[in-house]
Length: 421
Image (cartoon, rainbow, N blue to C red):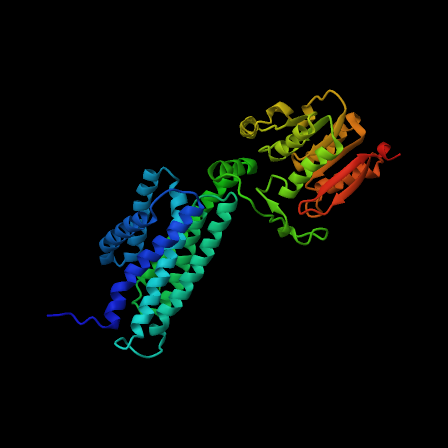
């Protein structure tokens, strides 16, 4: 007997296929922006097979969704180990894809209900797939945006996946009130009890992930992100201040490296004032160090002494400096700025280490600073206050003449008061 393939039947057949290809397409885009090599269609197919297998096994107990989730996680864990990446990172990448796939499937269900051969009417049950489509798309969009932020700067692996668990379980809990399924315990359906368990599991996992993440020093988190994805040029995201209302007009690499325009300014400043000795505090990854060294090389004379107290960060900066071909202009030291001994007169002092140290650093080096030289203090915006107030203290005491440049994070350009006479 030949089956009757009407519009409703075709939609029913195509729904899972379109859902699968949509998930694979979104996953491929996410892997690409994370710079992960892998075939998203194979990964999505394996996850789908694993999810369906576990869902089938759990269906008799009414736990199909829970079983599908567990099956997908198990398969993605195996795949992540094969790809030699973090399991949580792959789960993060898969989360927006999964949410988008479910949205497409629900849209197919809505179209099936409203095909010429499908049920008619505008009751809440018939409109439910449309509501679910909108909810799943909102969740997918939110998760994708989280992934965009994770690609630009350090974020903990697993945060997006946990958000997926929290949002989808909460949405499903609410939607189930309109499903009409029988209640099991406490006036809740099996699906709602499932959602409660998944929500709690997602919350506990997120708490554990964030606790571990924030125990790692901020500079080490940035260091890890750069090691995995390289320097990523992006709009500055410091908040607006009264002196700099449009920070997005500037560019940055990360939250601890000076704005790109400030880096360019440092090189121009060196080629303009022709310093013989430059001192920098807070090397970090060496971006400002290399810009200053480029200026010295262009001048054809001078030297830069720079320090980084953190041994791990120091080693990464050392590698970058060696690879740059500018090492001959740079004296990199693994020590605190307040322990650094400098011989000679400092023509340019650039302070960019820990915020509470900036004022103390200027006082420490001030006797050796050339009266006609310049002192720069980064992170002196009105939002940060610490460095700005430190510069004001030095000015009130008659030690410096200060100008505040209206950059996103703020930059003090100062000179010893005696150099103004």
